[in-house]
Amino acid sequence: MKKKVFAIILIVCLAFGVAFAAKASGLRVGAQAGYGGYSLQFTDKENAKNFIRMSNGGFYFAGTAEYALSPELSAKVEAGVNTMGKVRGTVSYDGKEESMDATKASPINFALYAGAQYCIEISKQFCIDLGAGFDVLMGKMAPDDDDNESFNAAMGIGLEAAAAYHVNDNIKVSLGGKFAWHFINTNKDLDSFIKEISDNAVTTNFGFQGYAGVSYAF
Image 1: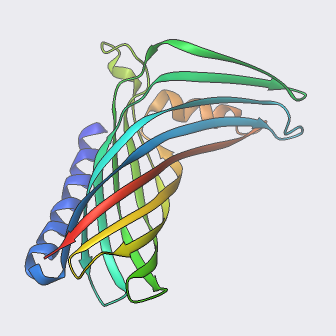
Image 2 (image 1 turned 180 degrees about the vertical axis):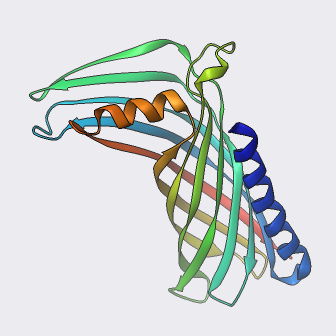
């Protein structure tokens, strides 16, 4: 399963790379950094005050590439890493919450995204970038490096928004964030557990990143 996931991601990245190389004048590359993480929550269908939530997050860094399809529309890919701290588990019963942190930090996860981005022009130099695409957050869920069974690739729909300022024709700085709803998990144990409790609980599984970025157009 892991080999198939990596193969799909590699094919997508190569396809975008070929498209970028076809027309260098439409290429913009950059980097973004900030904070990212994920949250997995199981909420009682009959009482929303009863839930179990696992959350984690840390420093986020990614390289980006955009290819202009038109003056407003671009294809965008992001590939980076998300450091993870100690998983925080929260249990709520009738509004009373108790939380506990794991004893060890989780391993670094890899973040991938590919989608389309549309620029809503506010002025000649300022615009709002809105995007949607396919988002992946993958890595080991457990802090024990020997636990190979804990690997998971969470995949789903990502929505991105950023305020972008064009310093000049080449340089753009941005401040934004991305929210992703992950509805596919490759880890069999996690997937089986979600299916087992789906009759009694609603599952929300999402990732997020907030970032500042800079890019350069060739």
